[in-house]
Length: 513
Image 1: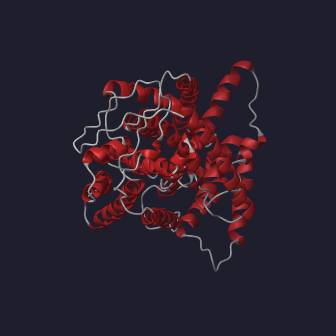
Image 2: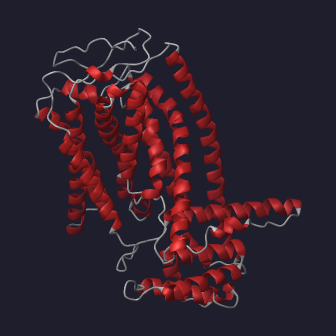
Image 3: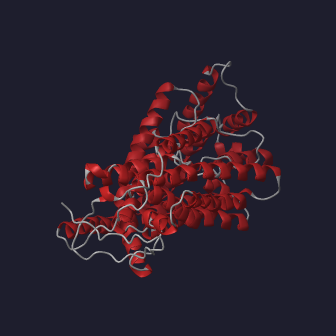
């Protein structure tokens, strides 16, 4: 049986800047974590609150429409745009390489097929533009005819085409319906050109510079795609390299732990399991409530929404007052939630750097799951027919940042790189993981850690606004961060990994879009 940690100092003013045991222990018996006489109440009601909030979030997302016809802002599909840029950029690079070896480029049929017959009106129009570039104008015309047929087949009692969608389809017909697209584009009015770029973003720009138009303008648009392909290639190789080091680090950690050369620092609970889930449930209610309030204030005043959302994000941390109001000491709260600096800031900072590498294998596994899920959803929607939008894993903060002023963009960056890592780590890897580990401790360390990491990570992924298809990828990232919580106990390394990942992702997408 694994050895026990030294008993915690029972004094209320105990400062949990812990001195870790050096007894070679590779684990802790967490079953003694709940103190006698501090039951903290029940945990059924808090879980019902959590489930209720998650259900409301899903219902709210399901009720969102694809496009607000009165809104002038950009409504394009960011994830699809990046995918399209990569495909066009890769084809462009292949053409440049083939010119040296005198070999024509022919795209595999499956690469072209993945962009056909799926999604909403705007998504299908984006596909028409992309297919014209990748496979030729005749393929684009086939897709346009397929779109027109689907529109005619829609039951008029349950579906009505919006004016903006009708205008977009009419533009596709004018550009790709017959004749040379380059000649057709020259006949477009400025309002038509603006509609294309507003609705389709970069793909709208691509539609305005088909083969045969100004070489300078076309080169400028295609250069964005080439840069995207190069950046994605560099990122992919970097992730593979660092993920390799992450796999090595994970196996080294397990080997050292088995040999008694290192230990898990996750300490026994000082509060009850009920109290930790209460903290998490209160935070979820407060968080959603503050976000709704921020939205109402933004719509009723001239205060920019990013400022209010940032205040609401940090303001949700007021949920940490709940255990204090219920009689817990701040030292107990800090201890259970990992709100301490571990051995020291330098050591935990280094652990965060290694933790970033160790997170990547989990993330890659999750991305594979996301690709499989997205393929299944796309095939299901294609078989079902219709014009339902294809769900893509895109965070709404990205298009918001694209249309924001510089101060507003700073607020969004602070929320993504500072607010989310601090607040989400405190309540997910801090309170929620503590609760799950406490209630499953009787099942043994392996079961308890595995179940708690996976279930907590799925819940973490589910409340994020990227949608259903992003859940596997987000779950993988969260599992990787949870390993750090179990290993180091403090949530500081997890905050570092979370902030570093969000920052790199935000910076990359902001430059490419």
